[in-house]
Each structure stands twice: as C-alpha cells, then as structure tokens.
Image (cartoon, rainbow, N blue to C red):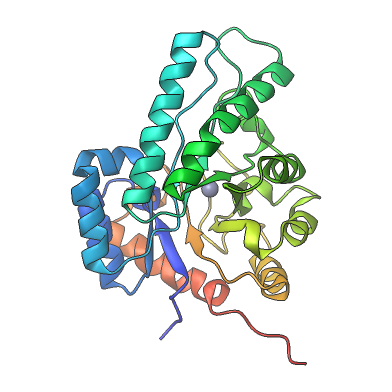
Length: 281
Ligand code: ZN
C-alpha cells in the first residue's frame, strides 16, 4: 500500500465533481487530504462543507484562492479586501492553514506592472492582521510569468520569498512545480525558505508542447518536471508538509471519470509523497 498520509488532491483536478463527490471519491481511494476551491465550498455551504471534510477525516492543505485585487478604483479594491477576509474566515472554518494568494495582474487598461505589484503588496499588508487573527496564512504562490498580466503579478520564487519575509508572521510560500520548474531560483529558493515557510507543495507536470497555458497541465510523469529531484531536496531540508496534485486539464484528465483520475494520481504521485527519508547520521 502506498504511503498517502501527506497526499492531497486539489479538487480542481476532478473539475466536474462537487465538494461532496470529491470528498467521498478521494477518501475511498485512501487519499488523505483535499485542496478546496472557494466556489465549490460556497456551493456546498461553508459550514456544511467543513462538516463533510471533517467527517471524512480528510486534511485540508489550502483554500484556493484569494479574490483578485487588481482593481484600481477604491470602492472595488475595498470590496475585494472584504471578500478576501471572508475567504480567510472560510479557510479557518474548514481547517485550511493557508489561503492561496492569486491576486490578479494588471488592472483594466493598466500598463504599469510595478504599480500593480505595489497595489498587491498593499492589499496583503491590509489583510495580514485578519490572517493572523484567524490563524490562516497568506500563501504566496509564484505563478508562471506568462500569467503576469491577467492572473498574478507575483511570478518569481525569489520575489515571493522576499515578500514573504517582509510580511513576516502570517505569510508563507505555496510552491507549485508547474509554475516554478523553469525558475533558476526555484530549488535554491526552497532551501532558503526552509521547511517552516513552505505551506504546501503543488505537484503538476509541464507538458511539451503545452497546448493551452491555463488548462493543459500534465499528469505527474508525463512532462519534463524532475519530481524525484524536488522530493530529494525537500527531504534534505526537512520539509514534512503536504503534497498536493493540482491538474487543470481540459484535453485529458477533466474528460475522464473522476475515479480514474484519482487512481492514476495516486499511482503516479506515490513515489513523491511518502514520509521524509531521514539522512542517516
Ligand atoms: Zn498551484
């Protein structure tokens, strides 16, 4: 039997399943955790969703995602902050230790990326006291630079690590192989971050060619990412946290039966999610 105690499936991987179906489908195949998305949680009801997850005995590595704050007008920006506080509360209710920060890129019509980034930093600084109060960390996830204009202007591992350090308590890193595998600062950055600042580790392969930037992510082993190398480094630095497969796959895995996607996810991820191999002394 594979050791799946650290293994979660991010529910977008089984896009067509409701929260109820995902909780049941993952638990039945021995998966220990579920990465939850806000829209599925809202559809179930936050309190009811929390009970479903708790009753199934699943852990929750993260809640996806923060609401976008790439809004230039004051009222819209304030509304986005309020929505983010609601999501932090929801994360606390389902036992998620972090809310994954995907803050948006440029505002409509904007061309000043530096201004967009400083607006995001301002938003995170405003959210930090609430995050601390409810015990949910802001999970800074570097997104691939081709997402900079429209999804997230936080794009390199080094930038997110700097930001994490400047925010201090209440912030951490969400590492994702799909977004970071190309980044020369990825593996050194994991080491610099240290296990205490890595909140969860998203597993996803980079296909060659990638046919759709947003929805053609690869099953573990089907692309070019060195998962064995990542696991060895994470073991070495003492990372004991979760591993979470997260597939957006409109040409392949979203078209299959969810049970098959879960079974193949377990099979492919098992070598990379087991307990840490302690270095003999
Ligand atoms: Zn991710």
